[in-house]
Amino acid sequence: MKHHCLTPRVVTFAQSIYDEAAWEQLPILADMLEDDGCTVESILHHFRAETYHTRGCWALDQVLGKK
Image 1 (cartoon, rainbow, N blue to C red):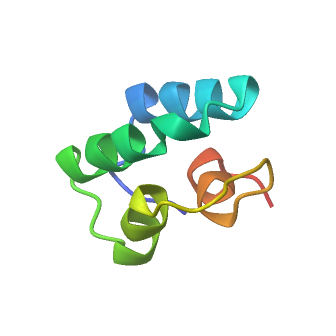
Image 2 (cartoon, rainbow, N blue to C red):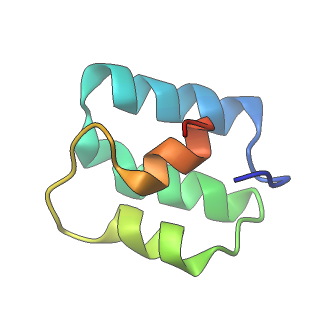
C-alpha cells in the first residue's frame, strides 16, 4: 500500500502493534490512517472489526509494506 497516509507516525505505530501483538490497538491505527487521509475502506473496516487478529494480518502487512 503506497499512499500519502502512511506517515512515519502511522508506520511507527503500526510496527509497534505488530512487534507487541497489540491487536487491540488496531482501531486506533484505523483512526490515525483516516485522520491522515486514508480512504481505503477495506483496511479501515478490517482494523475496526471485532475479529481475531494475528501476525500476518493482510491489512497490517500492507501498512508495513510486507509482502
